Image 1 (cartoon, rainbow, N blue to C red):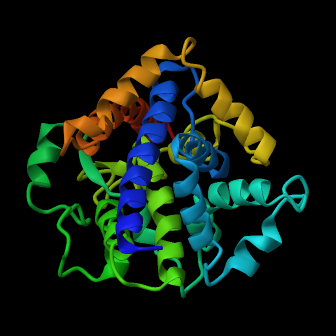
Image 2: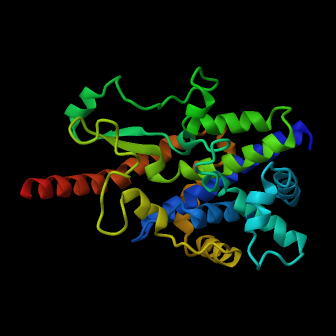
Image 3: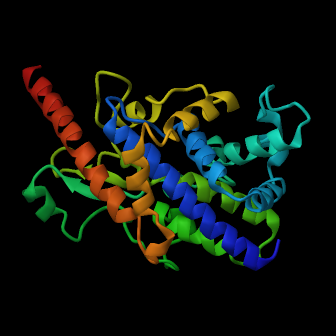
Length: 304
C-alpha cells in the first residue's frame, strides 16, 4: 500500500471510529444502562466503522492486519467457528473487528502491552479545595503533546493515538503498521468511554486518582469501571456484534444519537476535536455517580 493510501485510509478510519464511538457513547448516555467497552463494545464500534469504510479501504486495512507479527497466535487461533467457513470476506470482516480488541488480548505481555496507553486521567475533583490542592501537582500524565520527551511506553491515550497515526504515515513495515491499526481502533474507542478519560482526585480519599473508577465500589459489579465495561454484554461472536451494531444503526430509532455523533465528527469541520465533547460529557456522566459512591463509602466507614 502506498503512503498516500495509508494516509487517506487512516484519516477515514479515525473519523469513522470516532463517529461509531460517539454513537455508542451517546446511546449509553441516553439509555437506562450505559453501554460499554469490553470486547463486545470495541467490536461494535469497529463494526459500525466497517460499514462506513469503502471496500478498497477495508481491503487495504485487512491486508495489513494479516501481516501482524502475532497473527497466528492472536488472530487465527481465536477465530470462532462461525468465521472459519473458508469464505475470505467473512474472515476479513472478523479480522477487522478482532483487531480492535488486540490491545486487551496482550495485557501482561511484556513485549507488546502498553498499560498507560489505554487512558488519560483528565481530572475531576470532589470540591474546590481539592482542585486548588492539586493545581500543577497532578501525579499523572495528562499531556497531549506529541512528539514528547516522555518515554513512549508512558504515553497516555491521546499521545498514543498520535503515535499510531504517525506510524501509519511513516515508512514502517506492514508488521508495525498492523499493530498501529489495532491500537488506533482500540484507543479511539477507549477515550470515548468516560472512565478511560477522566479520574477523580481527592487529597483525603484519592491522592493518586480513583484509577478511572476502579476504586469506586458499587453494588452491581466489582467497581464503577467494570460496571460500565460490562453492561453491553459479554457475548461477542460475529453475529452478536452485527446484531448490536444494527440496533444502534437504526437511524429512525436513534436519530438524535446519529445526529450528535455526526456533528462532532463532520469532516467539513476541519480541525474539529472530539476530545472536548467526550471529556465534557464524561465529566457530567461520572461525577455524580462517583460522588454518591464515595459518600456512601465514607458514611459506611464512619459507622463501623
